[in-house]
Length: 220
Length: 279
Image (cartoon, rainbow over all chains, first blue to last red; front, side, top):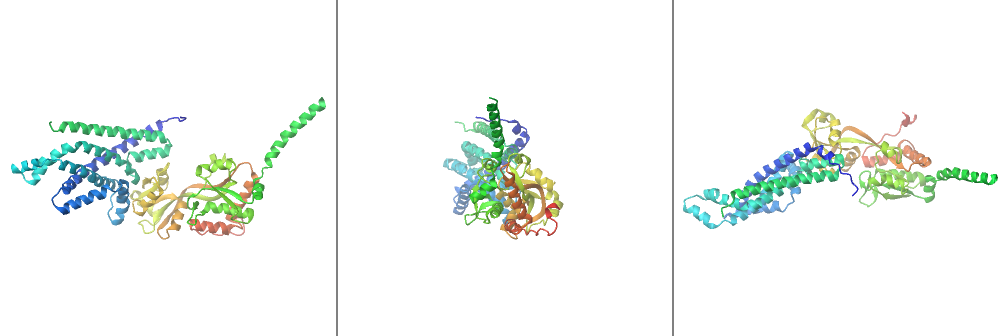
């Protein structure tokens, strides 16, 4: 291949890439945190005995899961302000990613809830716990342990989705990579370095979550 | 022997003299006239410069410049064959003689002038600020006054931020990677102004009357000229004459009509008396 690599032009702007990565992580952490709450509520909704609750949760999860996230991002950012709901670009992205994360995590949590043996609830009732107490002290902790492996999978995928924020001019990692790219025309170097940063970060996240998994695993 | 040497010398001398003489006989003007139509290079994807309309015809301001030259050559704006080329084929297609003339929103730069010969300019491009007609800010002065309260949408490009800050030093700049997202940002009030080429801005205003307004400030000038293969002064002079007379002389109505169609602005007729171009 007749190409002279020059990584200097990319490293020269490492501070931009670092700040982009930091913002990306921030977006992911906040959205996933909100998404977990939404997901948990929806999961309980989906397994609820009350039909309207089931429908509501199912409607949310199917509507969001079947829409491409880029479309959701553009809709929230560009269309909602015209309906009188205006968030700034970072809030708007967090809002979208949280709702998106909620729908995916709801499915994960639902699976976890279905896998919990009925005996646990009955046990809780027999020692006089209320339904809410049973959920808080028995079902959720046990379920969390069970779903952690698939949660980590979703977390990594959601972190990678922060790259789509570049579409609405949120200055995260991909945005800055594109900026460096148009300014230096070092296409190969820029995207190579950016990919490596994503790979490395995702690897770290996966590793961290795996450690958490082994620490809180059920004694077997 | 001496006579033979002298004869050889004469022959060599004659050959060396006739070589440049032959090069000079390549006369593009004559060639085009004999062919009966102009081979014209332009693009096809950038309104209002050169694009394919609903009738599947190539139209635009660049295209009209080609038709103006065809009209000057043959008295017929249809005596033209279009070679649709990408931006990066503009110089190579001239160098390899695939086209007689290229008009394709080509910015005049000293570097390019070493490879092709530029005609007189037919448009001066610059950056302008597009505003919503019913928006908060009426014009450039209002935008300036708003200081850091406003966001300007711009296409992500080299020095895009510096370019905006040259006009509005305190404004926030949101860079989008496609033109439609940039306009979308303006439409949904994500940005209070969009910085874009004046020609694109005028075209958008022609397409959507009463929706947008021009803030009335232009900067970042760049000259658009047609280009020909270097080394044929007669052909260059001819095209120059045609373009110049389009802007200042007998063909002014043709130029002005095209200008109005694509940029929506009425040009003032050149003043009678002292030639405007020397003012």
